Length: 402
Image 1 (cartoon, rainbow, N blue to C red):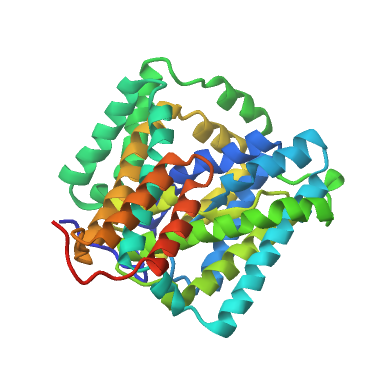
Image 2: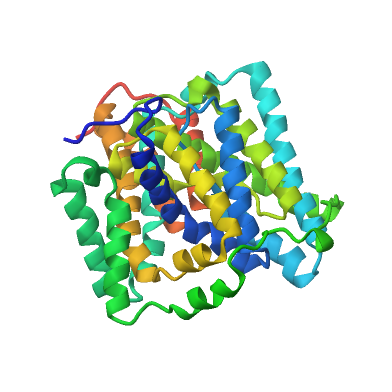
């Protein structure tokens, strides 16, 4: 078994940079997809995610190895105000309102504490929630892989090979190596479009923000009313991600530094991003998957990833190079990343010695799995809420069933 690198450990820079780059590859596709769909700038989204992650790490005392990227929960409302109404200032006012809601919840939790979270989310709720966070994303991975199953399977095989058989440093960068080998295979097969890379050389470095056409977020009641309910969806998703992180890294981020600090970091990061013109941010399951595969939990690697993302936002050829990675390659590695998260939830249930001979436990897990995987729109958040409710409402059993 590979040695685990703990949250506080710091590897040499020669290892930290490739490990940070591995996290960048994991988050890049989803982070730039949101601005593509909503009409925002992908370069600004990268810049906002890098700055937001640094802010998050600072406000959580660098104790949580999480990366903040563009949230998919807000695609609908962002598209409505940016593409349909051409009013980015009002859209960013809604994003700023999300950040302020996070900060408000942080203040409430600072007063009333966070110990009650563990009572609301015991292992019988946490385990299935962790699993569905990964399993609910597997259709996305399969859809990407379906663009060329041969390349996807080859990429997945390379990731597995390096995870199992590689020695030394190569054993902890299986995702990075899989993407490199998968990219080469895709290039040989003619699946890589290199023209955008060549075109980007004409303007090698370009500031992502145009000061002449920039804006200040504008509050509008309609926008706030449309954005605000989604904040509680992403708060629940953040809670799920922290449960996953705690399970994978053998830590308890809900207690130390505390879930309220997670919300503070996410809220301030989203607020700053709204002034830049970036989408609301959230912790990323893709990067949690990287932690699970590599067993390297050092937050210094996330610092490196954030800095690399900021650099990418200014250098056009680097953006174009990463964008040229075929979706089949990312699909191949995503199958492993998301599958590892699903397996981590099952491990949580085994380690907690949950008795499924009890009807209450069986019902809670069954409903969480069914809703989390079956509901396409925020299924994880709804499954978490229902699981918490069932755990509180269903009585404890004295007798076991066959």
